Length: 452
Image (cartoon, rainbow, N blue to C red; front, side, top):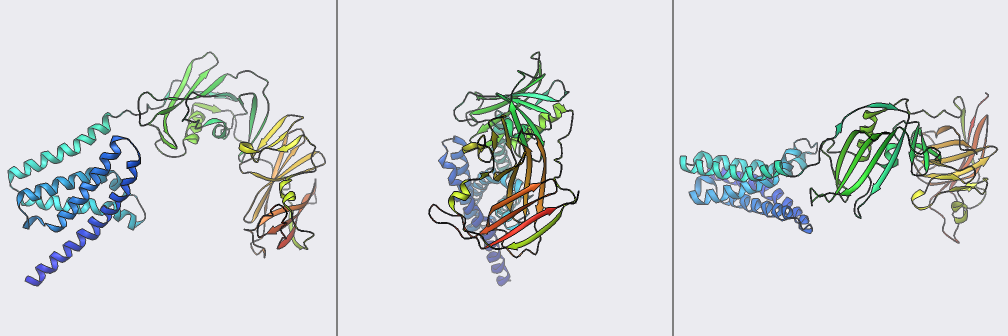
């Protein structure tokens, strides 16, 4: 009997330490990062986490049936502090798939609740009443604060419509805030034209957008994205307001988002990429009249042929830097923030794709853009010299290809015509540096041929 009692005490101590004390100490240590912030709730959270950890240590050392009443009450109060701090994380951890991560968050809460239940069962009526009141006050205080805290208003829709084109206006009156949706996310909605600043943008599907100088002043519907100081909350110093008006100035819809650095808070979409959420909101309110066009395939019935080739010469740093070949001087690649954009001076058009463009070749009356040269596929876009988008081609390399597809790639020769496209692709272990060319480890001649 004595042996079984000692074994039970050792088992209890091990469970309390492994499931409660150790993960609680880890979480309390991690909570110290919140001290970097000067917000009062950050300091309070760290304090509650450490008080809860102390409570778990005392709960391990002093079992309820061997401790005096006053000590049990102190331990329960400390554990309640810890439960207030960890309860949001424990509730979220229920949906975690990783069992170890789930145990780290849920374990201390379960151990604390087990101890509180034992104390409650051993207490008299007066002690139970005291414990209930203390627990209620400790839980109600943060709950009332949570319910009374300032929150972003929910989105409102006063009217809906259909539209072929919209005007986008972005205004930022803050130093620390930044637009969230902008043209990047709105261009994923299949409006025929989006007027923004001094240009008109046409979404082409698959992340491609082409623009020309703007001709019209304003369309029937105007979307404004306003980045402003947020007077309602010092914790969220920036608010982003989206408003949709018709040409007469009538408000049709409004949505608001609160911003802090790279964190966002919205009442109607609390998670996810908020720029896309905003674009989806306007898609529902201002329904596009058409669908996003699927780019035509350049050579739908072409046969793929891949042949090893000999290396002609090393690839220099100048070769890699000259990413536009055979084009007039007016066709150039953008730099800086516009890296990967292709632009023409005359006629004035700009083209951007989902991924940075690797190389550009001009032949005949067309411009061919090669990008996404990673893994086992290469994508090719074709535009006319006037900026009309013709279509795209995806070249999937065979799975049994002997070359390493993770190598750096450089197209040293490119030919295209109405019946197909061919290119020589060099594979390199590294990128060349100034004065130090890189010798490709292998090369392939890739051809698409059709009899049409």
